[in-house]
Length: 397
Ligand SMILES: *Cc1c(COP(=O)(O)O)cnc(C)c1O
Image: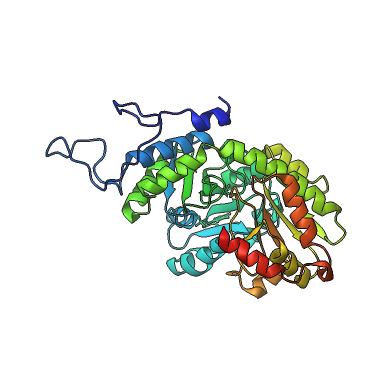
């Protein structure tokens, strides 16, 4: 079955004699048991809840895994992932990485005895060189966020298999509709479901999907032992958002292709990072492992002041961290989503301070292009009252 069909065709309420066509919100913490031995499908919502179960099964199916687990945020999913390791273990990860993941590994996991090394994951030799005897996990984002670098997932899976460590792929930027890491050899898929999967910026949630039943048992244990699962109402919101993932993403990606082409041809833009552009160094590799370039674009203007101007002068793009929403977002990663990476580390990793990130929504492409064109005009041509106009527009929204 095509994923677009899978997204809307599933049993919304297994075992419910009323046969609802949408999943009910089982907003209950406890379930009565049929006898004193505690017999019953569910007992306590930390351990299991029917709304969450439908969502988890749906996510496992979409990622091609044996099981999936939903958490209160993407960070909780990542933190649970590190819970699979023991003190003294080592993690290899990328040097262009979501800021919150960097912070988790650097300031939380480290205190629990886990060490990590960040390398350029586009270079398989660098990855091999970073492995140690206690390396138990390779954590990858491809495309990376925000620089959109592409890593060879099949190549990384082979390295992990030879070394006997787990390969986890943070697939937030693409979703299973565009990339299925488990089919390419990964052991786990991580999502910030806050992004594309939910799609409406109305819920924070995270996902771990796995291929191996033994790993699934360990994650189910951690989800229950640590009490990190997503609540019934948020599970329902995510399930509802997920149904329209394919129509949202198709439109967002079609818009993103047009925006990327527009930016690449614009004289005020120094460099555009988007794997859908023919000049992107990882474009061919990306096509070999993914079904599309997604809806996130980043670009450099060469001048922090100009980048700031663009961010503040757009009217339709809201100045927001995050991506994957139906409305377009614009941000300066070094000041916003990636500010938790110290400036010295950002400089070492060549993360340009003038980098602007766009998350493209489902608006009409012409409106987005017109908005970017006016925001990129030399400052003297901008309306003097524009920042205020923007303020009003945002307050109104
Ligand atoms: C947002 C994000 C996260 C963290 O997810 P939250 O839902 O915000 O906790 C992790 N990885 C990537 C790639 C992200 O973009």
